Length: 178
Image 1 (cartoon, rainbow, N blue to C red):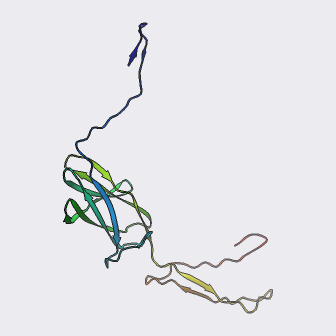
Image 2: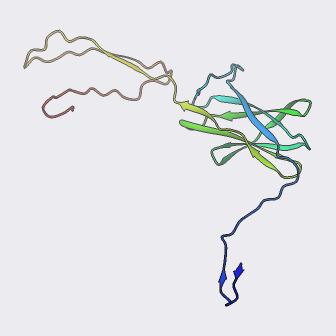
C-alpha cells in the first residue's frame, strides 16, 4: 500500500510467494512397456485393454521421495509401486490399463518428505481399437449403362471380433459423392 501526504492510497497487485523446505524431488517416466516387457517405440501405441507398464525413476537429494502418483492429464490414475533402489534413485512401476481410445498424456508426480512436489514431462500414448481393416474392390468388367454391376469387395479386418459395417459409395462428379 502506498500513501501520500494528502491521504491518497494505492494498492499493488497481489503477489503469492511459496516457501518450501529443501529441494524438490526429480521424477521421470523412463519407459513404457507392453505385457511382454517389450519397450514401446516413441510415439507409443497400444490397443484397447492392453496393459502398459510405466517405468518411473525418482530421487530427492536432501530427503526421501514419499510417493509417486500417475496422472492422465489432470486425472489421477493411482500411485506407482517402488521396484528397486540404486543409491538415492528409486525405480517405480505402474500398470496402466488402456481403457479409452485416443491420446493419453501420462504424467508422474513425485512428493518428497517435506511436501515438495515435482511433475515429469508428459509421455504420450495413443490407444486404438486394434487392427484397421483393409478393403479392396476388384475391377468391374462391364460398365455399360443399364447393366447391373457385379462388384466384388474383399475385406480383411484382422480382428477376431469381426467387422461392424461396410459402406459402398458411388462417385458422382455432378451431384457429389453419394
